[in-house]
Image 1 (cartoon, helix red, strand yellow):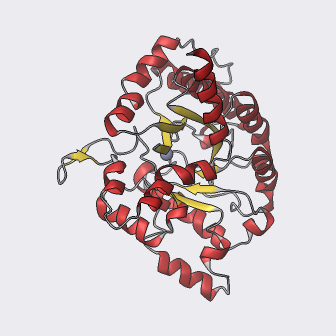
Image 2 (cartoon, protein in one colour):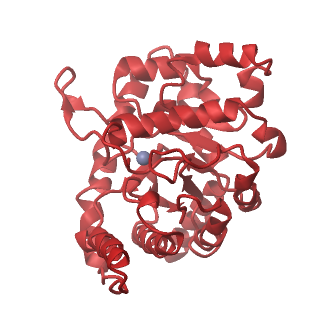
Length: 346
Ligand SMILES: [Zn+2]
């Protein structure tokens, strides 16, 4: 089985994101936003069959761990109350995708974070998504200010109530920023990679996982700049008299394979232990074109993993399936339930 741990609903029916724009405009004008728009099952089917599902088939992957569009979260664009309504709309829509295509998708939720608001406001929505909608993880924005980084690091105790809920529910978080408030930082080219790199460094500087030994984070986009600069981070940890990174971070921190060229994927697999790498493509996402050097889509990351000749079969199996099952603690039980439902209906 090939599990892609990083997909967003970037092809949602247009009235969904149009409503968010209306909501933000209404907030600015001090009037009530319009009600959430109607979206039919057929519109959802169409948006998935021509997009994610077609790509799964073409590339031979089986299941996408699926969340609302990351740049669309826009935690810095509205109040916590408005973001709560928006998160609910986004998560409900992902839930409908999973209900329509249960073999192909598992849900991950957006959290109603907001700049200057403590993350404990996210616990109710996390619980709803996991306990009522069957989601298996969440996306956690390390910078809900959208590029100001005005909040406290991920290791600050103010994040702990949310981590306690994650541990109790057995769900990991993908550390994922949203859009950028500053044109100096292109969202997917700079802000995302900065977010990944900054989050890892925050974790390096503290002892979060001594307090939460079972808490799990996935750092996407290949871990930002981290694997490429692994020596710098090992050296910084040593200078700070920290233990070895492998001992105090790599039981809890994982990297995905959203690196869009062969040398990058090889470096990731060479530097980071295979047990810490989860297959992902972030399709349909930041980079949608074809690489003229290879003739294949940049984000067809399966090709890169398949082409690493020195990777053992056991490690490839870890990257494609086993690690995702281990990190997303609720996934295997959900797949099992799905299989038995299918067995009962056939
Ligand atoms: Zn993403």
